[in-house]
Picture 1 (tube, rainbow, N blue to C red):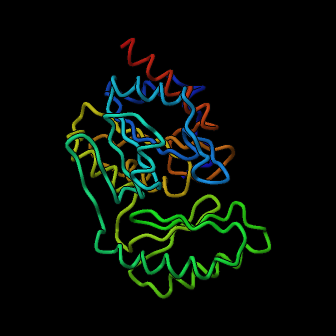
Picture 2: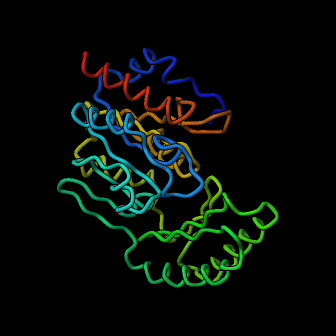
Length: 266
């Protein structure tokens, strides 16, 4: 773990050298990575410039999005055809000739938890319960500070009644997921296998900004066969398993544009 990974944008030449002559396979988070964090999920729109860069890269190397968003929501927000999309932290995967869902049998547990959360949080202003197919996100960004501990206590109380679910955290949110050994890291490893990208000619590169993306950074760092590269989008020092950093979504877009230029020239 490190607090200050070097900038993949400012030191792009050194980053390119770290690819070791291999073709990158890009795995991209959405919120906080290519779309700025917004007060509500539907307001986090990816700029057209970022979308254009993703389209360009998809013609040069494999590109997949791995997000906590619901799969259909993620696909609609990115709006680039032909990519692989992994929603709900990798529990729901779809792409050309690919379809996989993990934890379908836990959907009734999530249904029950959703009803309890909506009932118990209904009286707390701006506490947003966002249901996804394989997860429930409880957003606290717009909740008054004195009320936030009550939201946290309520979520923990609901989780205590649902032993088949587990709670994770993130930026101003709590999330309930199936209590399975599955996360973004395992999803990325599964995608590498499913897409036949495990060979020596490919270098997995994951861009993300949040706690849940650390699972992917660790999975790539621990991976055999040449490992992989983690890049964390971060506005200040933070403990991370990523080996590189970028400051914000605009710089992430600029970095991807430079990568596209480099791949085109190669």
